[in-house]
Structures are given as structure tokens and as C-alpha cells.
Image 1 (cartoon, rainbow, N blue to C red):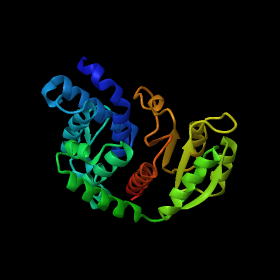
Image 2: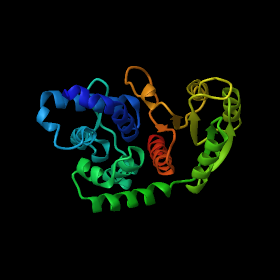
Image 3: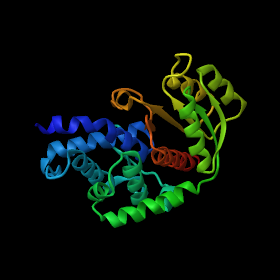
Image 4: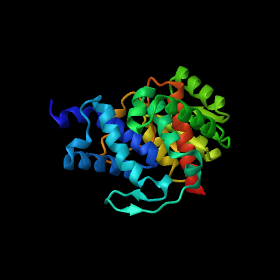
Length: 264
């Protein structure tokens, strides 16, 4: 199998991870492009003696470790330039711990695979994940607007939100309800399904809400690949249905952490 065919199935999920880590589609996708360019320029960076997905994420972390904001070096922009951005909150949490949490909870790597990606030990991954959960869950409580038309899923999301110490502002099922609720009070976070009860789009509902307020948003979809093409404006944070509670918690924590940093 050619290298391009080996890598292609994993690119959408690398974009998801990179966007969550960087805090924006533009920067995350730029890191993914830089990863691919590095592989093209130096194919030996891509170690074919490990699983393809692990090898791809290892190269990504080679690029990220040299430029990521938590080290104060700067952030890759879409044009390939660097922008300095100091993030006290990210430094406090620790870049490696956040990476370990996102790799295992969001990307579903085993601790052993995450250790290969981050060039550390399985024991270290366990300690980093435990530390990240402790720090990230201990965030300032906020209100969460849930836009979801499936009762069981909305119940699961509500339970997760409350377990993390946050409150559910409301659960709504249509675009009209979502916009009306956001007008009543600004949510600290929005969890939004893509397809709503009235056949409207959760993306459109959130777009209308964000015309008036600024809140972090996590989209929930059964078809993440459709929103991870890198070819158009797409969400920064995505949770895949069916989801594990740990994945949702990690994504919520990361979205709120980056939102707090932006507002600092």
C-alpha cells in the first residue's frame, strides 16, 4: 500500500485532534498540513514499523513540540508563519498531560500507543492522564446549553455536564428553541447535535447564536469525517456518536480551558 493511501483514512481524525489541541480550525489544520509536508520532505520520519495511525500522530507531535504555544514559541497560522501567544492557563495544566488525555479519551489510543506517540512510558501516560483530569475537571463551573433532539443522548450529556460540576442551562431540540434560549442568558458552553428535530442544522443554530454572543461550542455527530475535511470552515471541537463519557469530558474541559485563556 502506498504511503498516501496508508495515511489518508486517519487524516480527518488527526484534524480533530489538532484543532482541539490548538483551539482553532485554522491553526489545527495548519499543523496537519505541516505534518504532511514533513513526511513528504523526509519520509523516514514516518516509522512504518508501528501502526499507521500511531506513526502519523508521532510525526505530528514532532512538529507540535517545536512550536506549540505552551512552550511560548508561537502558533502556526494558515500561511505557515508563527504568532507568539502566551497562555498561562495552558502552561499551568501542562502540555504533555493535555496531550495524553486527548489522545486516550478523544482519539481512543491505548496508553501504550499514546506512549509511543509522545515518546514516553505507559506508566507516565497513566500519571499524565490522571493529572490532566484532576486539573481540567477542577474548572470554574459554567452553564451549558444542550442542543440535542434524542432524549437518551441529551440525558447522557446532562449527566456528564453535572458530574463535571457544571449546570445545564437548558435542553432544546430545534434551532428556534436554541436561539431563544441563548437570548435569555448567555451559556458558558454549547453542546450541539448536527441534525435537529425540525430538520434544521445545529451548525446553523449555533451560527445564529454566535452572531450575538461568544461561547465555546462542541458539535456532536455520527459522521465526523464530513466536518473534518479541512476544505471549508468547519467546527473546532467534535465529539463522535456514539460517545464515551471520558471523550465528552476531555473535550468539554479542553474547550473551556481554551475559552478561558482567550478571555484572559
